[in-house]
Length: 171
Image (cartoon, rainbow, N blue to C red; front, side, top):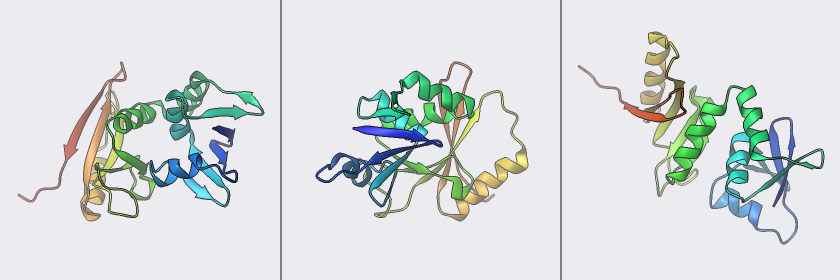
């Protein structure tokens, strides 16, 4: 399957009789279908390229996984990709969490967008990042306000991930 990279979006044309892009969206919940195109984020496209499920081209030149990873590094999103890949490999459905001030929304196994609500908001933080306590409190407050748990994904210098489930409790 071919995707074309332009302006940080990888577009996969949905050709007549082609079910793969539709299945990627409807069964695996990748990207967003607009008209006759499946639009993927660079993170999603990099994951699919790495798994051998997508070929990505930019100006008719085939892109490598390393090239997409370099784009993610330049945008400061490589840590997000590492977390995305880890959670996806564990079988979770992941969608953007920008609406909630987080990096991702995470659907537990057996749940999916449109058939249930996400269970977690995922915030990716690097180990050496100084987090402001008021920002941290706002992440928790937003998650609690929309009936979700906050999953803090701490990425260390070796790109290993430690997850913390942060919940709101009343004393």
